[in-house]
Each structure stands twice: as C-alpha cells, then as structure tokens.
Amino acid sequence: MRAFIALELPADFADDTAAAARRLSASLEGRFLDRSTYHLTLAFLGDIDDAEASRAMDALDVACAGSAPVSLAPDGLGKFGRPADATLWLGVAPDPALQALAERVREELTARDVPFDPKPFRPHITLGAPGAHSEKAPTATGLPAAGARPHRHTVQEHAFPRRRRIQAALHSGAGGAGRDADVNP
Image 1: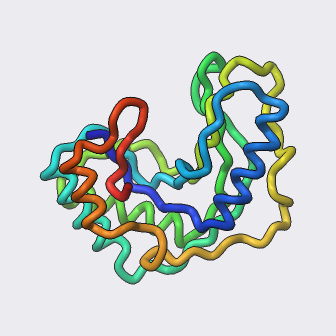
Image 2: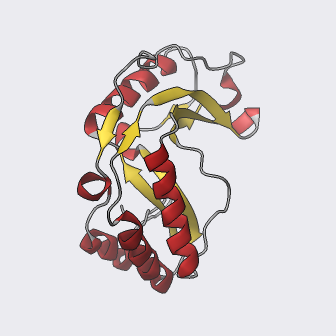
Image 3: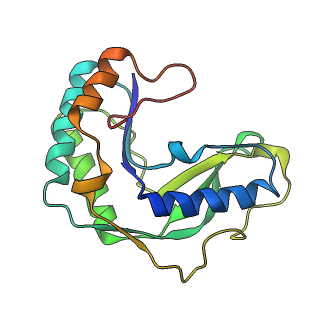
C-alpha cells in the first residue's frame, strides 16, 4: 500500500485553504483537490507492507509523545513538477515545532528501518494540478491575508487518528485507484 504520515489540518485552516483554492480556480484551469483531502505530509513512505506500517505507527507514537503545539500559517504559493503536469501547493510558514516534529518522525522511522522519501521537509498543502492550462504563474491572490492569525494545532489531540482506523485501512486494502492510503487515514 502507498502510505504517508501527515497532519490533519484544523477545520478553520482547511476552510481558509479551501476558500483560497476556490478563488484560484476562478483564474487557473485544472483539477483542484477537495477540502477533505488536505493534509500536511511529514514523511512520504511510498509502498509499504503490513509489518512496515506497524513499525511506522510505533514511530509515530514515539515521535508525537510530548510534542509541542505547531503553528500553521499560509506562506505563498508554489508549484512542483513540469509545467505540463505541475502540482500547485500552498506553502506553510516555517515553525520550529513543526520542523522538529517532522525531524522526529523521520528519525523514528529510520530507527525502525521504515523506508521514506529523504527529500527535505517542505511544509505545504497540495491544492491541485492546474498544469499547463494557464500561462499565468500563480500569485498570492486569494490567500488569507498575510497578517492572518496563525492557527495553533496540538499534535497529540487532533492530528493523528486512532490505531484502529489505521489497522482497518491496512486490512481492507485502502488506497485503491487514484487515492493514496496514509498511515493515518
């Protein structure tokens, strides 16, 4: 199964992000993701088996123990990939607690021999794949105001669903066509 470890977004931050995406979709063609899919990936695991998923859950438990609240604030737009199939994303402002959490997750995965993509952590929310449909580069138009109050998010209480949901996803073969299953669905 394809998997990743991600923070679920607080509802108000996800709402603000969805509103910004709707404004962007008015000027950029392409496929924008549904609000329910928004998340902030801490580590992309790729294809893992049940044993690796179990070790990843253990790594997540240890990494999150005692974690400080993280602050989420929008920080511009960007694109990954080639112009023909670029992925549009909303950046998340640097936050020491968020960076530390991502590092701890990756350290714990390494300690448990769970493979993950080693690319540097770049906090962002994927908005969609407008691709080459627009020659105009995305701008900050439609984003929440630069001075918008950051959202505080306590990792232990809100970010990660319970193990039983993870196990149900593993046993049901979650992550079918076109959708990745994450270690915390």
